[in-house]
Amino acid sequence: MRKLQWKIVMLFFVSGALTLFILFIAQQIMRLIGREYWKEPWVDSLFRAERLLVSFFGFPIIPTIVGIVLFICIVLLLSQGSIRQINLLMEGTRRLAKGELDQEILVKTNDELGQMAVQINQMAKQLKLSLAEERMAVQSKNELISNVSHDLRTPLTSIIGYLRLVHEDQYKDEVELRYYTDIAYDKSLRLGGLVNDLFEFTRLGYSPINRVEINLVELLAQLAVDFSLTGQHEGIEVVFTPATEKIMISSDGDKLMRTFENLLSNALRHGREAGRVDLNVSRDAKQAKVQVINYGPPIPQQAIPHLFERFYRADESRTDQTGGSGLGLAIVKAIVDAHHGTIQVFSTTERTMFEVCLPLQPPEN
Picture 1 (cartoon, rainbow, N blue to C red):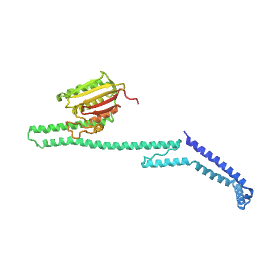
Picture 2 (picture 1 turned 45 degrees about the vertical axis):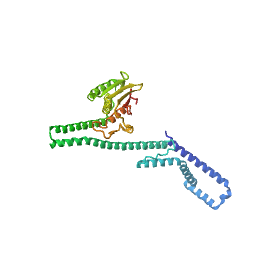
Picture 3 (picture 1 turned 30 degrees about the horizontal axis):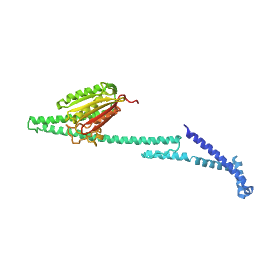
Picture 4 (picture 1 turned 60 degrees about the vertical axis):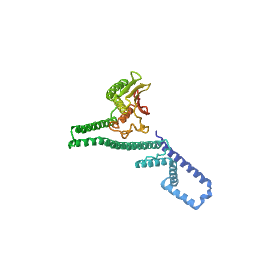
């Protein structure tokens, strides 16, 4: 790939050939003009001066100077395309240095200059993408700090308030004291849960997926039993319906356990009145499909696209008893994405279903 080098060689070769050709043509034209023309006094003086210069320098100086000037002019004329390309490259690098990344360098050749222009354009696109990602990361970090501060401050303010009442002995009797401490304890549990969810969410970005072969049916069956026992005192039953007895999947069992724990907790919390949550699992040739269905109030359609955003709440007025930390579904989405799977939400007045699809085998790199 030395197209530019050979282009320069050809440029000088063609320029030299054209110079010789033009000088030859000029000589023939001068001969054809007529001998009477050469008898003019100023022409005769010019020839005598030329002869003196030849005798002094040893070679025809005037034709040589004319040839050099002609050669330079032809080189400059034939190299205009390459010069324009170099100017475009210089202008592009100046814009790049100033941070102007939107305007691309126009590529007109396929030699090294053209390849350099392509690489500069690609570098500008990559730099623009990196800057956009950096801005998004900074914005995301600021939003995370703001949301965390708000969600941590609410229970912490309540804990401090009730403990201050206890510390200042502002209670009537032991019953009211116990009431204050119970509220402070409940708020501290919520605060601890929020901190744990936040830690889990941030850790997902650095924790690798440790894939092993697991039986998804067994994992879900265990979860169904655990959550059925937990929901007994509230009259909620988890009904597990597997389409087959065995679905082997290459995945991180601990992370998948956390995924379906969050989905089942969410389903139990919002489907409490129906007294039932369905957990279904099936498979096809390429993927396993898990459905978590509750029969509580529907999710507003405008809220569904935002359900997996951090700290998003479809019902902004929900209380500690009706809502979680706002990170559970974000954790679910992060784990499913890390497994190259998908998650969808379907909600009607009859039921709300979270459907997770996971590939049976990890995609090839």
